[in-house]
Length: 181
Image (cartoon, rainbow, N blue to C red; front, side):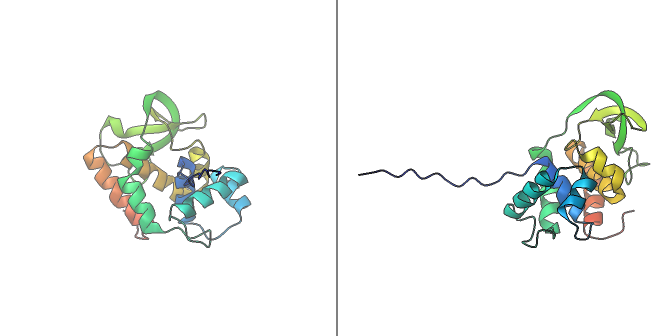
């Protein structure tokens, strides 16, 4: 008698670039994978694989371009800080995020919320925050809405209660289509 070995199917696990891509797709009309790759700063292969993982995670409809926004909001507000925790480092030059970037700029949250993504093209100097994925600075430079969402997402990832509360509200407002104040 021959025994059969059954290998369980492996579910794709979301990666940080998948979240960046999902946020990008919430504000962008359908484009080719090549155009998306150029805008977000990923290879076409990475975009293709990310779309598959987003679909398997029920964050993307089968049409391959429509993000299920309520599911994405739930992931970002309640899970992102645990799945992709923030790493704050020493002072460096970089691109402003959290309280130094719109839409949180001008609000007072304390020095711990003044952060930058390390970048040689950066315009600010503050404690460094490792971006969700290396493509973040590239993507944020090309898309203001995505920049705001990624900065707010960092506020959720790294912030204390008050900062998280404000960042979550503004994050939801942008994704759900309300104007951000």
